Image (cartoon, rainbow, N blue to C red):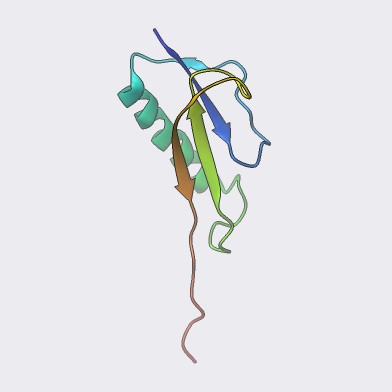
Length: 82
C-alpha cells in the first residue's frame, strides 16, 4: 500500500512516519477528516482572525516527498454593522 505524509503548513507538524492508505482517494478523505479535527480543536489558532493554514500531502517525508495535493483553509469575518 502507498504511504502518504500529512504536513501542516506552518512546519510545526511535519509527518515523518506517514500513513499507509489504499489510494489517493483514501488519502484525500483522511486529509479532510484530519483538517476537520484540527479546525474543531482550534489547534491552529483562531481561524476567524483570517490566519490561513494548509495541509500538504506528499508521497514521502519533507523535503524529498512530492506534493500530491494541498488543502488550504482561511476564514474572514466582517465587522458587524453599527
